[in-house]
Amino acid sequence: MEEVILGLRIYSCCNCRCHIAEHDDIISKAFQGRNGRAYLFGKVVNVMTGTKEDRQLMTGLHTVADISCIQCREILGWKYERAYEESQKYKEGKYILEKAKIMKENW
Image (cartoon, rainbow, N blue to C red):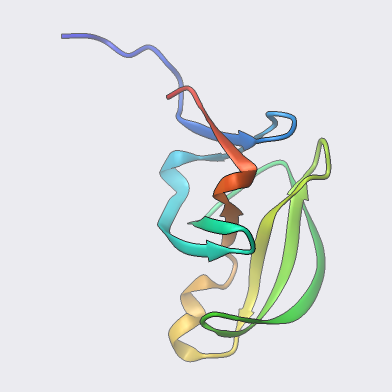
């Protein structure tokens, strides 16, 4: 039996490789970002949150704020601040990371 000594599987900024999230914090991979597929995370690190704004997304009106890498300022996705439809409330306080903006580390 082979023992894996690698650390946590993480996602990093595609631009500067700053640690952004852990694989275990993915809630869903079935999301759509601005530029293609995106993942919904319960927790991220090393990001700055931008100004809140209302956006009409595929699932209705939401108040969101873009999130960017704290190190290089690359926009990586957004944070759901508020969902106006009851069925979308589970997204509040969660984060979207665009697949094209992150890379896998320690896999």
